[in-house]
Length: 148
Image (tube, rainbow, N blue to C red; front, side, top):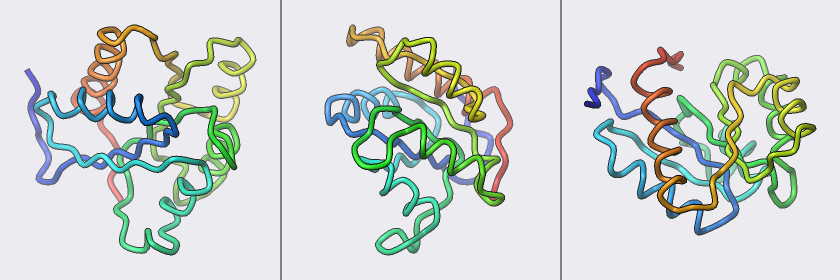
């Protein structure tokens, strides 16, 4: 059973350029009983603008958790991860790398850049939903996350 223990919805930033994966992630999170606000950006440049509250993201809430794809247009996920973890104000936001890559180099590099975990997206719809639910359960129900 999911129990929301905070007084506000948890803020999640999904950095994903694949509309199908965005839709599936939204569906899986909507089925959860934890209150959350999912914000979506489609590339790494937008992700950094969102996190730094630049331009149209001036009033964006700081996310409690970031779900980050590695293979993004413009600035890729590795660059985004590196930039976030090098930023004094952003580095404590947990980042879950959620990507199709199963390459050892991508896994190693993500952890070297201080990703909090690395998950390969399953191609099967039911398994993808199960993965998103497990991320939600672990990161939003079990782990204590820092607040802004």
